[in-house]
Image 1 (spheres, rainbow, N blue to C red):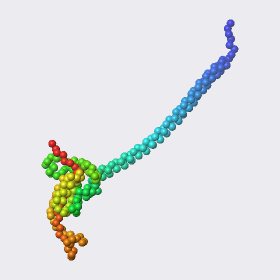
Image 2: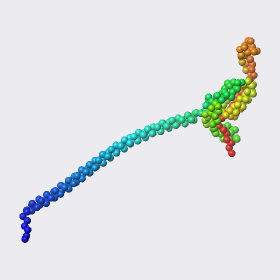
Image 3: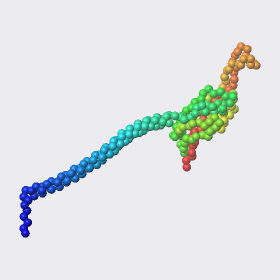
Image 4: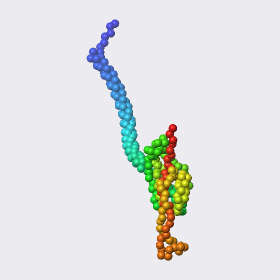
Length: 237
């Protein structure tokens, strides 16, 4: 038997169209849900990235401040270092109080000083005598004494002691004591001569002049030159 389809063609076409539209709706729904999920995921990732960028920006600001602070400290340190170098160049690095105390300790009761001079000389480039004997000179620190160790620099100091003594023996003894001291070296006479000075007699002294006339005393006038022991000569060859 031959089947006869009584359904009109427009009905079948409408049914097929409705099925196709349902499929499109389902597909669009799936695409829309996928886009929503993607948007949510992207928004979450953007939020996290924004937070990370904010943290990095805060760290960058802190790093810039630290860099600026480091630069300022470095510049300040350079200025202090320059001042320290300048002070190191101009500072003689000796202890005058200790030296004066040592000299006072070495001076006997029969000696009176009227002049004490400290003259600095460079350690390098010494006198022609040092060159002729092929010697080198370098700065050293002397050993500590009871008066304390003197702070010494890269220069040598020539010390001049001038005054009067009761006799030439007292002057010679002073030169010996200067040589034996760890503070001084190369002590020698610049000159030593006898001289006469006049002094007023002590009140009530025996043999004093009744009219207060001054008495004549024989003394030894001297000048001694020595060096502070902050260098030593090294023989070459």
